[in-house]
Amino acid sequence: MSVEITLAKVLAHCGGDPHQAVHHLGRAIAAAPGDPAAYAAVAELLPALGTLPDNDAHVLPVLAYRHFLAGRMDEAVLALGTLGGVSSRFSWADAPWFSDPAFLSQISTEALSEAGHRLYDHGPGPDEAALQPWLTATETLAARSSAGPEDLAKMAVLLRTFGKTSESLALCDRADTLGRTVLAEVARAGTWRVLGDLDQTAAAFQRALLLEPDNWSLHLDLSDLHATMGDPTAALASAEEGLRHAPDQPKLLTAHAAHHARLTGKAGDLRKFDRVAADLDPAYADWLREQATGTP
Image (cartoon, rainbow, N blue to C red; front, side):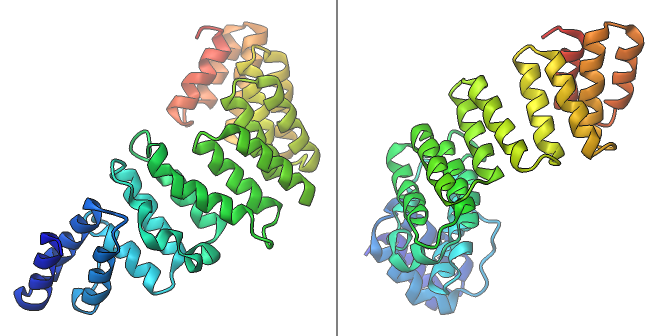
């Protein structure tokens, strides 16, 4: 039995300090995330630990396991994703419960996707070894007989986040065999963009728009992409098409003003852009101003 587990038992049973007991259990798990002994100690001491805060990284290893034991699988994976984002140097998903069939059969694709993205909240994310259990979970959920095309698309996005671009595109193709969806095309577009193929990215967005032509956000995505590709005329046309469906949408209005100013070269049109961009997210507004002036 590790020193941390011994201290946790003393503090929980005799020392009257369950909060510190939880911290010692968290350190025991961190020292060997794949060791069942720490989780056995957590299960034994849980009745004495009381309420566990969800905003303390030292508590999250214990909280995630408590969720698992209670059958709250989505909450368990979300807690572990948050923990991985805060402390990526530990292989938290080596926890035995993370590969338990009961866990893998009950977590939702939404929760796994959100948890996987949380791994990158504060840094580069896990290394290849620490990533493996997450990849296994992603593949397991994608292989469910009940998985629909949107479930597969969500897992494709997650695979891209994990750096598995070929696998992501293949999963998008599998999703298409179950039914064409906007989400699969958007997932495919994002992966092609990561790979640097902007023509394929544009083609995927265009296919998405065939499925949902009134989706203003897709028109904006395509407008931004055309601008990135150095085609302000196409960027303006996509923004105009988006405004047909969402005439008051601030981002579309600002993008339209930017590309219009770029094509006319008139100072008055640039001033109009500055007015409509005033309340926009500063980073996006700055990028659009570069498009409007043609100065990166």
